[in-house]
Image 1 (cartoon, rainbow, N blue to C red):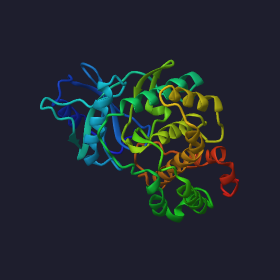
Image 2 (image 1 turned 180 degrees about the horizontal axis):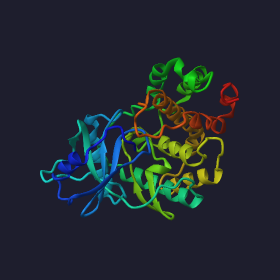
Image 3 (image 1 turned 45 degrees about the vertical axis):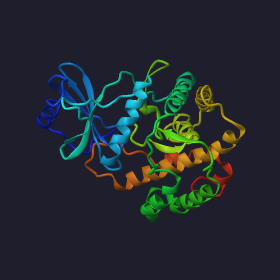
Image 4 (image 1 turned 135 degrees about the horizontal axis):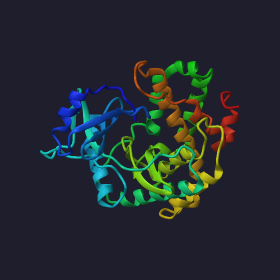
Length: 321
């Protein structure tokens, strides 16, 4: 979440008048994340999230995302469906951007998850994948493995402004992984971005799974690899908590036990997650507007994680040696 587009109180009040949600009391921009503009909105009746879709989220993809949330909500998953206005419309325009008013979920995102919280989160991912077995929607993962090389080329040698030699080393890693990527593993709809800040909790109980705007059709196990890379390291990417990672896998395995083939492929999928987020963070680092209310994320924090997942590869890369 972030704020790129400023919404005036007058524009927000006019927008809320389309809904049966009460009158505007307050609105506050949410700075976390990098993808969309988000506001916490309080009315005389309740709290909501206003999301304005920017940058990577195409307006044409919104019906897919909203139908996905409706499908999961209907099966009892704690997700935040969009709210329809008096005419039954959920997708709107605010300040020239596609926008939705989204139900607010209680809970907090943990910064340093415990093993028990990771177990619950892994279990929630497994329940989500099980609930999506009959979801008919399809969407290409536009941040998936086939798209890494083009994004890498768009970043170009500016990657060396982030760390000398990063351009060369990322190119080597992308090529190596392309040769072993397990395209044959089972595919489904995945979240693809289930970081701790996209999971709401009260204690060890999951109260919300949010931010589905990278959801897509891809290798099911890749979703768990993304979570493992996001949850089991510290913010710098240098400290790894094996117990948290093991708990994630154990929670997930309640629903989808990992086969020998899955376990063999998992480190490569996790390296892929590291490359994906290194690239997207590098692009954002190099291209985020200076006046945006947004927290830029360190691209090297995910790059460093490669050392744990593939020491042999890391030993060939000067930026990781």
